[in-house]
Image 1 (cartoon, one colour):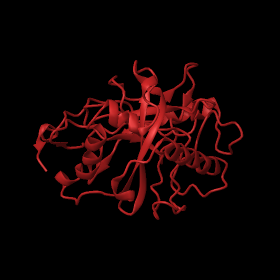
Image 2: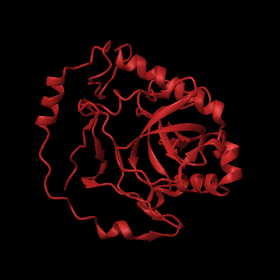
Image 3: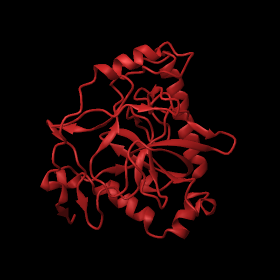
Length: 274
């Protein structure tokens, strides 16, 4: 079984953590954010930033000793957006959200990119925030921020959640249904939501993203207990967790070498009608 991590580097060839080293803002004045694509649209492998590993590589999630894949639930094939996270954000499990009444899920905040492009795993894109959905996952707040890739030729037409309803009718409803049902084929109940499953608008989403950035600042500066999270980074120079280029190379050199890829299980191509 293969579960080796993909360590990311920047344009200068320096190893970086996709959790800590990629700046949250592509353009702070315009509220344009960076996002790391973990799962390209139409794929099934549940890839994620490994928050507990040094330099936080992208790895496939494991459940009960098996690599994890998301089921195909009618009428969808895998993920229906480019799915990923905004770097330098953290949903603090010690903070009870005033709106949802639940604590954070201990991860960077998630994004669903509705742009036309099918992105590559590990790709860093610039996105505009449009709104958010509040999933309650096993009693934790798990925000799903709706964004659009700034490379999309129609990006200028999308500025708020109502623009998604108007220009991509049915997409928000499909998004809600996807999150509601995606665990059912695994024998789990339907997911629950705050606000009766209502999508919150751009301003609400921006407030939420910026709040999680403040939680991350406390985390990376050791003002908050990191617990099992690994905060090793190479670019946050005022962080006590910042390491040297030599130390970062040692982390990569210590990782196991890539072996032959496991075949994708035939069960991944099964189709479920819920």
